[in-house]
Image (cartoon, rainbow, N blue to C red):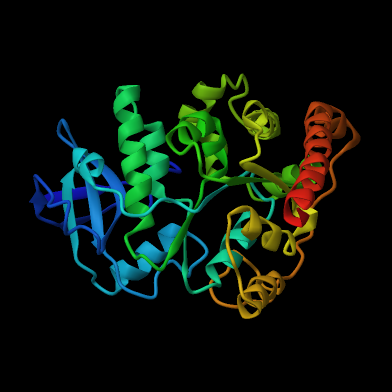
Length: 338
């Protein structure tokens, strides 16, 4: 069967091309452990999942789609199954922790630092999660079942491996739906001075900024431009506020990379000195470049005085997160001591 893949928005991975893959109507959920779901596709009136056979080493690249492309380049086997098969997967591994973030705030450095430990699997901004969250005409109860199964499937089955999920920034809009499925999973929220975040977004606009589905969800009144990004950032900064708990830890960009060690303790990890050194060592490299490429600070245009006034609500949100972070840090230190 011919399957067409389209790179039409931020939830898609690949440029348009054709490939021939057999469809499996029902997956044997006991033998899917060596496969990873990497794309949701609609063919006719059927929702399907594309899987690829996983080879080690895995998920060492900065982002999920880079790992998938590397596997495709090795001609790794692929197959299609019904999307309902995700719900039938029997979970053998629970996620060890979640990473949420506001974008351009050091989240990729955090995920790559965790991935520097060989017994960690870090799934960074997986496309099928993005697709499922934005899938239209899907009953919410069904979406929740599929979302839980998809996260379990991404975690794999290796008993000696801890799995972490780094969500795409706008996944914060679905924080409540995610946390209700994993009520005991610790998570971190990484943020940054919104002035710096906005400067980065203006210099290199993200694909999600033009996603009309997200604009509809947030009620964004701006169709494009900086105003649209400011509105979206406010939504992201606000999203975790109703869910603050002892399971959440708040990290400011300026605390990295050292704060990743604190996050490791929050996740319940017991790292030896070599593993701790590997985590800190990643701080000197460009997190978004594969391999070990030295980090070079990027020059950004300063915001105008008028733009600075526009982001005042964002700056107030930032101050609120700073206040809560300081409270959490004191409580966390007490828990460690006692």
